[in-house]
Length: 376
Ligand code: CUA
Image 1 (cartoon, rainbow, N blue to C red):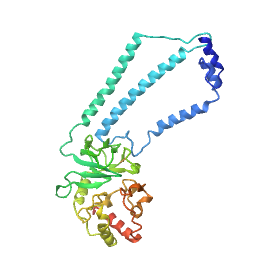
Image 2: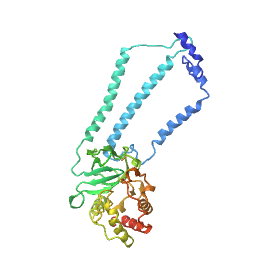
Image 3: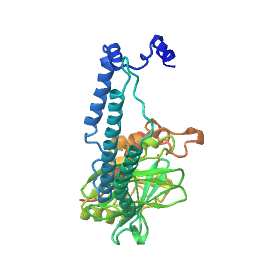
Image 4: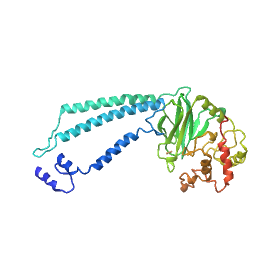
């Protein structure tokens, strides 16, 4: 047996066989660069992972996100220790008991004491991981507090509708799109739904993720945002052509600012500026079939509700800064900005208006929409 194996040494290009550490190192001693490249990549990965990024779940900014983060760190540390110990012992055994000239590699079969040890240790590791995980699952199912801000997040291809239950005029829902506002320090309770395909709601620094299922309503763990700021959210489930462009923001602000926003959302807009009078008429006659603005004749529900649109930081489901130029381009020809599936006639996306409206008319609509803001 042994004799026939040794003959395979002659095969060109393969590892020397039986494996001999000294020979292998001698053979590959000039090929240090691949090893260095991999080492460099790993070091960069570790260093870059500490960078500040908008969707970093290592920077929890709510109580619920902190709980998830704590479990994550415990599991990662336990896995790292297990990995280092197991691979370390393996490396030691492979080198210590390898074959050497004049000596066959050591073999061993069955060891009751070892087997008991490597059954008992994983048991305790799993208990260590299991306790905080189960505690996290239990607190994720907690009921919201009475004063929690309750929001229904409804996924559409490809934008988010947000409905604040009972906070609109006459006890209706207060409806907005692609941007949630929350008071800092007050609990929020988000229920996730979809009107078409499966989407997923995720704000890495605050909460999530949870799938938005058609025909089903699921609730996220209630969470309390801890700091004022703007937090990035994304759809985290592939949902078709513009999935990667289905983003949103969560604006966490002082309670007074939040209350002012709610009050103004319930109030019909003031008379528009002169440059926007034509825009208002055009919007109500054309855009209002799909979009709504509270207190006006625009009551469409197919597209995003645009009440207080001038207060939004972004447009186009969070993909563009809400500037005049971007809004003008968006209304003119959305197809330059967002992929549109024309197989179904492009019905899921707004028409391009540059063929039916003049530049000035579109500018006037822009002026009207940007003027929908809180008087300060
Ligand atoms: Cu919606 Cu991906």
